[in-house]
Image (cartoon, rainbow, N blue to C red; front, side):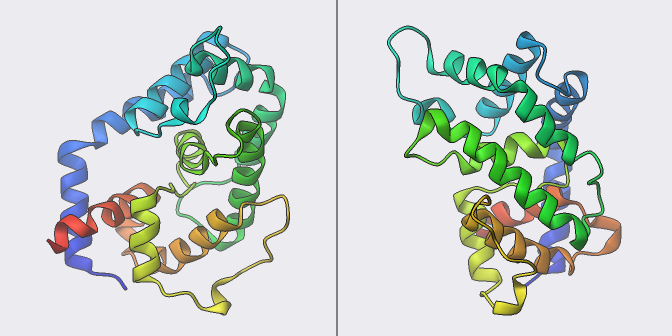
Length: 210
């Protein structure tokens, strides 16, 4: 389920290659923590969406008047009170990740997902939403197809992993992802128990195995 040597290798690779870039994204979210500043909102959406290759613009249908990225920014800005309320609920969530915070994270992801899906439906912006939330709250696990696939293989599902019921207002796919992520997170050495480092380990795992 967990390879300590591979994890250390992934941590070294992250420090050498990507940590500085991520710090820029964390910092822009600290500089513009809310969404009342339209320019700050645009900066966060553009930097996170492009740096993490979320493809969010391709999920939005063109309205023939604005770029898809402008549509996203205007939509989020128009829903800024709701989005900021979601982020406020995450203010008490920090690292190290704790079991009693998982429900708050899953609920926040489900709430923001519903807002973004208003302009991407029927396509799900699950990956973008998790990444956007992560850079505002680093304890939020990042979902993408590579990491989800590796995690599914590494942590075969068991009913006891479901720590709380996934209600209709949550994203079941992300909820089960978080349950699996938590099982693996508990195996990480306490000096290295970072959500971002575990994410890095998971998406590098196919490369490390190769």
